[in-house]
Image (cartoon, rainbow, N blue to C red; front, side):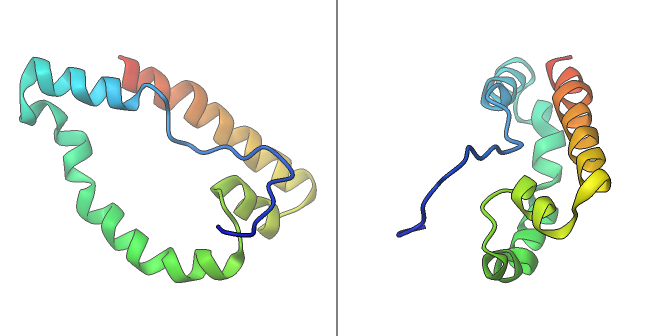
Length: 97
């Protein structure tokens, strides 16, 4: 990332409350309380290994930027809006319980 200029704000899908939820589940129920996050470790590791070189070649820093490169127009707006609703409302509501 050396030499890159950030001319616009970039967002990620990592929620600020995720560490709090994981810590709370682990403190309350022990390590078995975090089975949801632990069960996905292998899947995420495989995806990182597979997509790392492709993502690096694209020059995108965030998944939103990658979507902007791939899609344009109404479809891109619809995809970004849908992702915002799913991650912002539905996933966070599930995580917060």
